[in-house]
Image 1 (cartoon, rainbow, N blue to C red):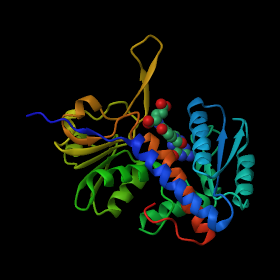
Image 2 (image 1 turned 60 degrees about the horizontal axis):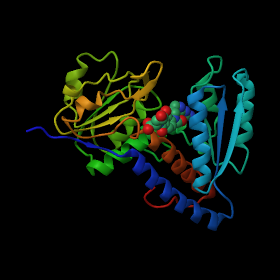
Image 3 (image 1 turned 180 degrees about the horizontal axis):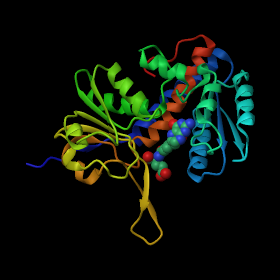
Image 4 (image 1 turned 90 degrees about the vertical axis):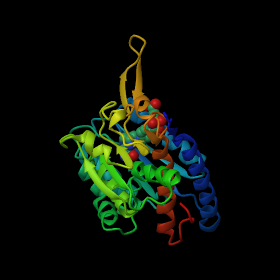
Length: 298
Ligand SMILES: Nc1nc2c(c(=O)[nH]1)N[C@@H](CN(C=O)c1ccc(C(=O)N[C@@H](CCC(=O)O)C(=O)O)cc1)CN2
């Protein structure tokens, strides 16, 4: 008998999360007399980054928060960018600071992230936040992996004891994802491009998180029957029409569907969660700065 796995609707889940955030924002405004504020910094002209930043601004305002957008040319020096961050660190209207990545090559990403006040680091990339996450202390957690965890818990409930394989070891997704799954008492393996016999490592997993950045690298028959697959990849590949492109994930989704319990599609899976969790993190940061509890459930 062939079964067909379910597609996890990240777009719908993200929309629900944004409604919850908006309700939390309204409560915050009523008690504090001001809106939470998110500052987003975009350096250069990367077209995809410009779209993400525009969407962040729109969704921030739609959730009832203040959006501050700073666009700087690709020629900005590292020192000038650090000065801007210093100003935002000291601005009381700003609860969250995000510098859109990637940055131009002449700017040291780590130096920029290190300059952000950890209390305003709504991306969760500062070593203070990654260290806190690693040792199980409350932290601002990177948006994409936290979004993945929300989708997994919604699908599977309690994750404890499950075998999880994270494919990809980036600081932004793979490592924090592994820390979050460990925090849920999963047995966690981080695999990557140098892992030997990746297919059999992936085949052990009840949960596969694919964040390797290679189009459809993870094949359908690598997946253990009944596993849940979270595909973080957003890879642009040539489309069917001459000159067109389309987006695919890191998993060969069509092949995988008959094997899985559930899988996130690309697009419409993990991607929309990233911005919804960013809004959530901004509200959480605003509550922490105001010395009040964040809304339960967020
Ligand atoms: N400072 C940061 N930079 C970047 C991050 C981040 O979390 N912080 N993540 C990505 C880009 N990103 C948000 O910034 C992002 C990526 C994808 C999506 C999304 O909704 N994707 C859609 C497809 C979009 C398309 O058609 O191109 C989907 O998957 O359905 C939202 C946000 C890198 N930089």
